[in-house]
Structure formats: C-alpha cells, structure tokens
Amino acid sequence: MQEENQQSPELKNSQPSQASAISSLEKIALAGLQEQKVSRRWSVLFKSLTFIYLFFLLLMLLGWVGANKNSSLAHTALIDINGVIEAGGQVNADAVISSLKDAYDHKGTKGIILRINSPGGSPVQAGIINDEIRRQRKLHPEVPVYAVVEDICASGGYYIAVAADKIFVDKASIVGSIGVLMDGYGFTELMKKVGVERRLLTAGENKAMLDPFSPVNPKHKAFAQDMLDQIHQQFIRVVREGRGNRLKETEETFSGLFWNGEESIKLGLADAEGSADYVAREVIKQSDIVDFTYQETVVDRFAKKLGASMGHELGATAKAWLPTLH
View 1 (cartoon, rainbow, N blue to C red):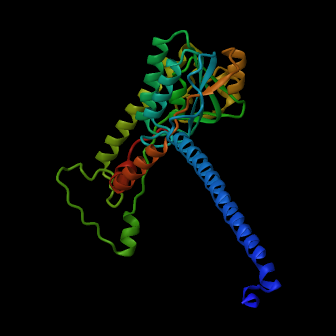
View 2: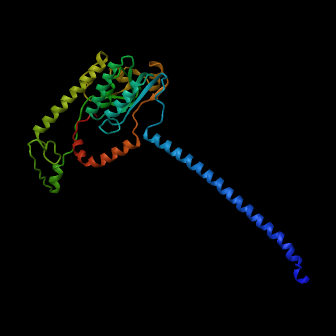
C-alpha cells in the first residue's frame, strides 16, 4: 500500500507545469479580449469620423455649406457670365438674377462686377438679365455695377454688358457683334440627286415655315427677315440707352461687326481697360472679392438632366430655328 500511494517524481513535477500553462492561457485569452475591445472602440471611432466627413461633404455638394457669404465685411461681389446664353444652359436668366439678388441683399457689397466671357445666345435671356440689372441699379444706386470683359463679349453678351454703369475690357478682348441671326440648312437639291421625295402635310399654310426639306418660300423668308429686323432694332435701342452719349455711332456700329478692346473704347462701346482685380481694387476700392456666381447643387443637376433627357427630342427641332444673338 505504501508503494501505491507514492507518486513518481515525474508526476509531481508535471502538476505545477500544467497549472502554469493554464494560467498562461488565461492571460492570453484575457489579453485577446482586451485587444478586441480596444479594436472595436477604434473601429467605432473611425466609422464615426468617416460618417461625419461624408455627411459634411454631402452638405457641401448640396450647397448648404461652403464659402461664407454671410460675413458683414465690405467686399466686391463677383458674378461670372461665362458661356453661351440660353434657357437652362450654362448662362441663363434665372441663375444670373439669383446671383444679383444675393449680391445686392448682402450688407457688405460695395460694388458688383459682371465678369463676362460670352459669344452671345438667346435675345430673350439676355434681355431679361439686362432688364433686371437696370431695375436693381435703380433700387440700389449706391452699389455700382461694372461689366468686365475677358476674352469675348459679343452679341448677347454685350446686350447684358450695356446694362452696367461702365464696361472695362482688355486691349485684346472681342467686343460688339450687335446683330441677330437665324440659321439652318436646305436639303432640297440633295434630295433631288438621291431621289428622295418630301411628303409633308400641315394644317395652317405657314406651319411648315423654313422647313429645311422644302423649297424656300419668299413669303416666309420675308416674314422671318422682318422679325429679325425687329429684334435687331430692340438690340440697338438697348445699346443706345445703355451707352448714351458715350457711344460714337458709325455706319458699322450696328452691322454685326466686332472690334478688339482697344478699338471698342474709341468707338464708345466700352469705357476703359481693366481686369476684375483692377476694378475691385482701384474703382470700387474693395479688393476683397466674394464670388456670388450661382452654383448648381447635385440635386439641381440631377433634376435638370432628368428633365433634359425627357424633353431633348421635343425641343431640339424648335430650338434650331430660334433667333440668336451671335
């Protein structure tokens, strides 16, 4: 019995080793749990920061946050008129008028610069913008409005510019093109050569006026020319009202020709040379420039693309024949 109760030395030595191993495993397990907790905390922190960043970025894209235009500090307001003037286009009356109202409503605005770089476009859109500039000038006579021409201020672009108090240009700017055009194509001779017959039915004798697949009707041509002449006279009247006795009229002033900036000053189409920075610093005396140009939000662009895709085919044909100030 005494021999049976005795344990071998190897067994006695193994018991402390097993206890030590279990203790080490417990420590490793606890360390692993602790590491998981820390990892989860960091994960939550990074996810929260990412969410805040993306949310702020979304607000910027939507136009709800961004450049601070609510400061009461004195400044020069800048509105860019850059591109073709057309309804729903890069430059349109709604966007420019919105920019004008924002600039005038701001207490810190001491002057407004219309920075123009446009070849022209819709006489309707240009006319609406011209009318609004003149209306706002009467309401706010203490806030001058200056047009600053960059590369080109032609036709509809100049239609807008003449509403300003003064027009500044670069010596190499293109200015003028006071005229109206309506363009299209005629395919009747080509149709004869390839043996294509035009079959057109209308209700109303003038409904197919200026149809490119039909011979030119002298009556329709005279009617269209008369309409263009009327719009041209409207344009001329606006230029004369805007420029007053500064304008030095010649036989070519309203012929549709255009001139460089240096020559436009001599003709009274512009007042002086100067960039936007120059006008803000030396004329308005407020070198701090705040951009009030209307910027589309993501929602605006999506809505416009949706509407454009639905109405593109319907509007393309009609738009091709609209008069333009180019």
